Length: 326
Image (cartoon, rainbow, N blue to C red):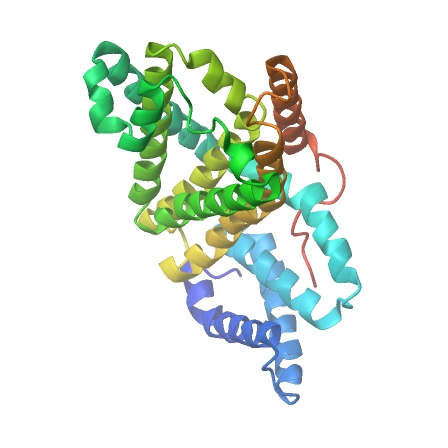
């Protein structure tokens, strides 16, 4: 007869925690030789627990937690190093887009908050241009008052490679902050999304008011669709973390955070190569007049369509991510 879920968790949790600790040490390279047998024994017990959870408690956080735990243990014990590259490829071919789709509600909420911030910033400046004094940084207002963008002449004083490197670093920082702020019960992520949206909306509205709207669009057209999408995805990951802290479900809050936090981290890690790519676009193509506006806009639309086409369609066939080990 199956035990209740709380009783099952209370009885088996010590072994799961021990296995997690050994896996952490194995990954850090500090596992002693005599502990390898303990690792194998705990893995087999966890695999039996996974079978129990799959039979009696399917679809619960405990089931998902054990699925991930067993997959990590199996990879640590049986997966040769040369297969790690195959696992990395599988992550981008299958796991990352599937994880994105599984968190679609959080990503949609993130997009809503970001758009709300854009609208708030734009409305304030368009209805009362003096509102720009509160919302737009002074250095940007100085450029705009001279009918210039802060990007004018950028490539004449800084090599494109250095520009791209600086942009990549900044974008990565924004992405990590947007995600990590979710640890403040999600409120930090909400603030970051609204704040970034207000900043973008107010700057755009001020540019439009001063006759620089077309010039600003020309600058952001190539990189904007993907770059802003990544911020929204990071926001969705942060909101998921915040929701877990508020409502951990069947698992203790710490284990629930590990389980769902690992899924959220996948979203951020999956965005990393796209951040690098879009930094190159923003550093080499977006500034200046070498590329005409229609080329930049076409490139931005194409990159955005490819990015979201990949996220919404990749991994639809084949084995599910995190298939049961054991």
